[in-house]
Image (cartoon, rainbow, N blue to C red):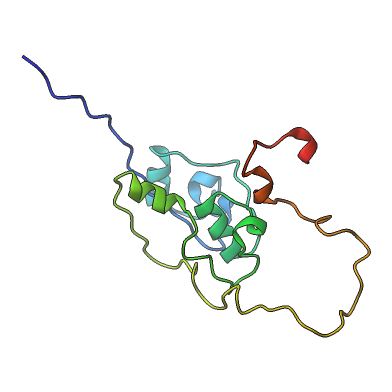
Length: 155
């Protein structure tokens, strides 16, 4: 008698992002005054990332960083109202490709406002001259790692 291959259980994923909500403004985050019993109960049986930091303090670039796993300098959303490229790889796209049903409820503003193509170079003389070589202020250049893994001397 043969048995069917055993299915590996996959976790359910519920990703809650609240715009402008500090971690210490919920009960499970240590606030003794604000009552958040439903979030506290969910947090008690879930994974809470209590040592997380933002990639950018502005909401759209940070949401795009959470979805792509890349810094704003790499995904291109460096300020609000600059769209994430429609073909950008996101964790939602990866999860859907792995068979998960994905949905977004509420505010996202990923493809909202100005496109990066709207911002054009000016032909006039610059208002100031940059004395530094190109790339001196680049935090992340993903093209560097297309053919090789990062090395310590890259930083």
